[in-house]
Image 1 (cartoon, one colour):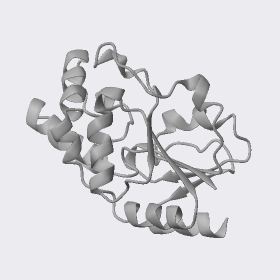
Image 2: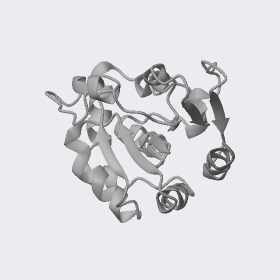
Image 3: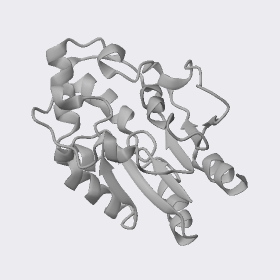
Amino acid sequence: MNIYIDFDDCLCETARAFVDIAARLFEKDVPYEKVRFFNLQDSFKLSDSEYEELMKEGHRPEVLMSYEETPGASKVINEWIDEGHDISIITGRPFSSYDASRKWLDEHGLERAKLFCLNKYGRDSFIKNSDFNLELKDYYKMHFDYAIEDSPAAFKFFSHLPDLKVLVYNRPWNEDSELPGDKFTRCPDWDSISEWVKNG
């Protein structure tokens, strides 16, 4: 099988780190459980310039390397690879973050997983002249059997695959989102994701 996996908040605890960054930079005291919007500018009530500063800080290599792994992620993914499944980690991070992201994966035992930076969210706004190593036209030629994703904003990228099963990692910002159809299933953790893929 071919499996798509999002990076932030599926493999690592990015939003929890951004909670700390927003508190440190702007004295915004928003508990993780109250991060109700995928757009962190809305969740933290930031101005455009503050949001740009937040995103730049959160994408510095040393900050990216500090993100905690989501429990069970590397264990399940390595089991899939051992079983012969093809794993593609497709992130909305700009290509300028590729090296640190690749290093993070390698240091968490995910050396065998492919990594692609796809311009999912138009984030050229905070890192000027960003590049991405996967364009949408090429992404839409790829085939996946399963996708693991947390962002409602990314659901539109699956409409070209009618047989795809999307496992939505439960996060505060997607709890109130209506799932687009019966091919979308909520999962609370990597154990449940593993079970869904195993049982099809």
